[in-house]
Image 1 (tube, one colour):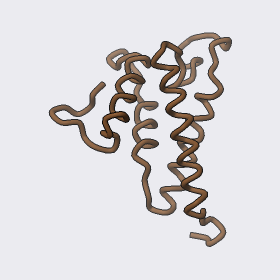
Image 2 (cartoon, rainbow, N blue to C red; image 1 turned 120 degrees about the horizontal axis):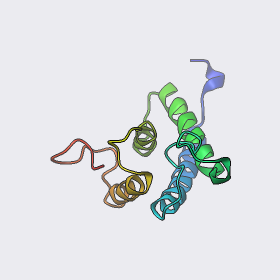
Image 3 (cartoon, rainbow, N blue to C red; image 1 turned 135 degrees about the horizontal axis):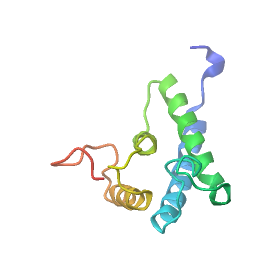
Image 4 (cartoon, one colour; image 1 turned 180 degrees about the vertical axis):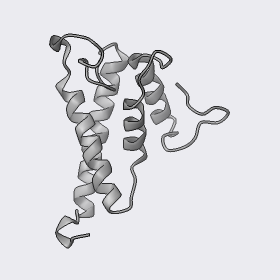
Length: 123
């Protein structure tokens, strides 16, 4: 790795904190019914008036954070789990509102980054 590519630990912490704060705000809004947190509304077949730019930036930030951490052989469980949820699509998966609520509950219980007992996924 090029020494110029190194990110200072303080910068990483600031980036991770910004991600966490934005994620919590978006999860709260999604849990109240707003769509588009886990995927673009265009993918959901909805019009552009429903676009959620903060959610799109959050997904971009998560990918960037995950990439920077991977270069330093580190991980962020919150980021990893969020991106995992963003990759779920299909009729058999719960809606975004339900995903957001379940994710918020796991965060509040301190279960992010751990395998739920007795089942693969809580959603």
